[in-house]
Image (cartoon, rainbow, N blue to C red; front, side, top):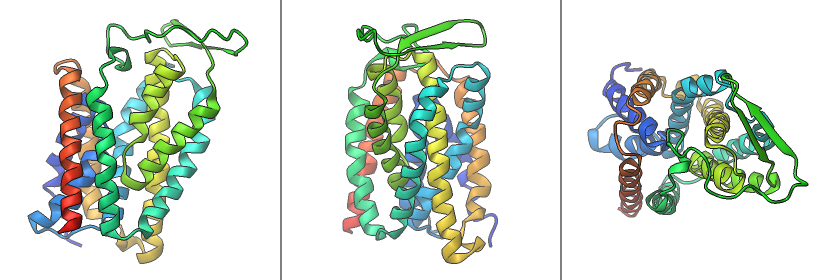
Length: 294
């Protein structure tokens, strides 16, 4: 195994993780295309699309690590909502991960390409400042749920701030989370883009708590999907089937880039980042379809 063949991915992953942290977009959504579409152009050993998605998810989990720890320490997680949704998200993402390994590479490329377009539209049209944890208006503009019969949820953070809201219909949340987890397992993105908006807009959870809850759900989902991908690779080809010489550079790059992105928060317009990512997703979708048709 050549341990230096993927050395160039170290700075690439630092850049991707930095952009992901600044924009709030899944880093795996950029890393997977870089591996699937970029490696053939660079002449380095190629990795099958399903394996590339698994490696991207595994890398993304480590990139989320510091964020998860930070929110948990600050006590900005609604664990009741987390428990209600994660038991759906993790197994669904794992099953989708297993399914993606059985899909023909060209078919998976087409699926990836097609799914990029709706995500691009969602990002381009999203303009609610309250969806961003760093926003000055870090609360939903929507009125609280009028149904006083619903259970009152209360979270007290590490600084003593109290957040209260009426618990929303979690059955609907499980369906939305299941859809996002399916996309995460199949194409490595989708769960984060669905989770945060539904917690803020539909459930009226204060943004600070919604962000912490969302990132914990996403991290758990990504871990479940990546374990499924890697487990199946090892079952079929042993430990050698896993591209450890790639992970050697992607994981440290993601951790470093995540820290850089966190320090740069607020220096670039979130709206500019979102629209730039929307355009990038559209381009990625088109490139996948062109690659599959070639």
